[in-house]
Structures are given as C-alpha cells and as structure tokens.
Image (cartoon, rainbow, N blue to C red):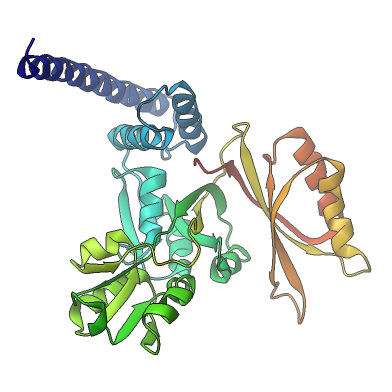
Length: 361
C-alpha cells in the first residue's frame, strides 16, 4: 500500500469518527434539553447551572482518559460541550471585571465555556451589585495571586454582600510585553495593572531601566492605550494583545513562572457537597486574650486543613479585624459542621461565605 493510500484510509476513518462524535454530541444536547424539560415540569424555574455536577463530570472524564490528549485538553473540550448544552437549556449571564481581554474574562471562559453571555463590568463592586440584583446569574472576581497576594477589594465586598461563593478558578498567568512598535528600543513608557507591573518588576528593571511605568485599571486597558499611543507598550495577556492587534515584543516576562491567579465565582446559593470541596468563612475573634487561637483550635481538633488566612479591617470599630479563612471540606460535611459550630461560639462575627468544588486543575 502506498503512502497516499494509507493516508486516504486514515482520513476516511477520521471522517467516520467525526460523524460519530457529532452524532453523540447532538444526542447529549437533546438529553440536556430533556433535563431542562423535566426540571420545568417539576416547578424549577432558576438557572440550571450545577457546578458540583460539572466538576463530577470533568473528574470522571479525566479518570477515564487514556490519552493521547492530556487531561487538561480533555477537560477543556468537555467544558465547552457542557457549556453548549447548558445554553440549550437556558443561557447564563455572567459578569466579569472588564474590559474585554482581561484575565478575569479568561477565567470566566475557563469556568463556564464560551456559550455564556459575558458582561464586562467596570468594578468589583458593580459585579456584586449586578448579581445581587439578579441582572447577572453569576459573577467572576479575582481574589488572590500566588506572587502578589490577596485582592483586598474583593474581600471587602464580602463584608457587606449576602452573596455566596459557588466556585473557584485557578488561572496560570503569563504576562507579555506588547506594543504597536516593532522594536523594544522604541518603547518610552509601559502601561499595565499594578499587579501586572509588580509581577514583572525584575524583567522591566533589566530590559527597560528608567522607562516610565504607568498604572491603569486593567491589563486590557493597558493594551488599548498601547494600541493608540506611539512609543507605548503594555504588560498584558494574549487575549488583550490579540484583541488590540499588538505586536508581542517579549513573552513570559513575569518574574516567577507558575504565577497563578485565583478567582471566585459568586452567586446566590452554594452547591451541595462533591467530596472535594472548599469552604470560605469570614470571622472576627472575641475580644479577649487568646481569642484568635481559640477561634482556630476547632479546625485542628477536627483535623481540617486551613488553606488561607487573611485579615481585613472589619469596619465595626477602630483596629478591629475580620479574618477570611479557606478550609478544605464542605460546610455540610459532619466534621466540618462540628468545627464551624465550635468556631461560631468563639467568634464575635461568623459567616460562611460558601462551600464549593475545588478548582479543576
């Protein structure tokens, strides 16, 4: 058999597999419509997004994966299939920290797929307000970066908002230097979000010493300015660079590779347990000696892993602080429920912000 004949045979098999894949995806879409019909017949009128169910599907698919596609690629393919099927039931409206081209938009796509109605919003506060008002089903907000720490504005919004955390997204952040200029020597100033500039400080010091650095509201806004202003460059991600048709002068300029930002998905009701969950709390210690120690001891007694502890002014008095805590487990898990009950007895302020599936990696 000649090479041409072998290629022809393989391509014929690919065509047949594609036909089968299309048939199966179409069948999955019809089943999704059946799910929506059954739910409506039983009086369910809210959105049909179920983060715990999606995480269950993704984990099962990854456990079944035998290659050659990686688990990450397989998860991305199935995320888009689920997104398209959910849109057949009821399109979701999701607010994110805009403008278009930000890393928050990329996180929203990673969590919900591309068949959602994404709405860029100007501030973190406005995302909370839109979801609280019901104009958005969900919102996506940044909460912490692995090198630059927490996003205080997001934590502060939780102090007054009734919304719950319903999911989390971890996004690998690659920063690039881009410009309408084609030569690094032509760059006279660099724009970016303050965290973008901080994440690339050493690279900028080495390659663009003495060049003016200007802080703007987002990396996407930086890219927009660089596209219109001669001699300017932006520290931004691929999406913003593509959106504003910039030339990439240097890739991966972040000082710490593996730099990751964690985002929270906010909604009105946390999902049920999946067996691999996180719980977020905000608490204040009782005003007495050993208050913080006593507050945290139930976690140790019940063998619960605390993954994050941050302090913010509580707005209840001068030098009074609220502590934001993440722990492994769901608030409905028996040992977590027991620990939270003990913590609430030691706290002057105690609120569960939500339990949700751990981020798919």
